[in-house]
Image (cartoon, rainbow, N blue to C red):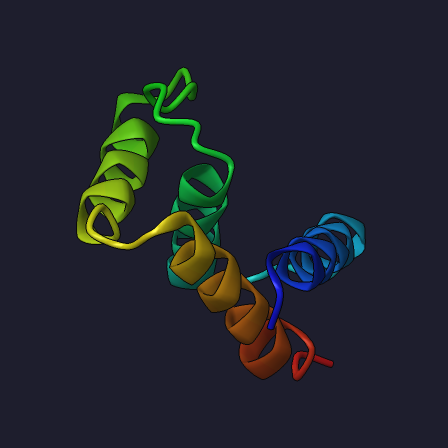
Length: 88
């Protein structure tokens, strides 16, 4: 898949998640969060006002820290396809 195609599919997956109205499991949200941050090269500290949430987000980022931007986009897309789109 070309870089441009990957970016388009990633943006479509992000839009799908942002428009999704049903609750998603916390572990899935954390994975999506980590992949999104890596895909966008945003390595800022988590911005929650709740320390526990920041800890979970930081942990998710640490677990995914060794993947490339392209791998993060691909993983995000795959998670949306396999997990989010199957929730009814």
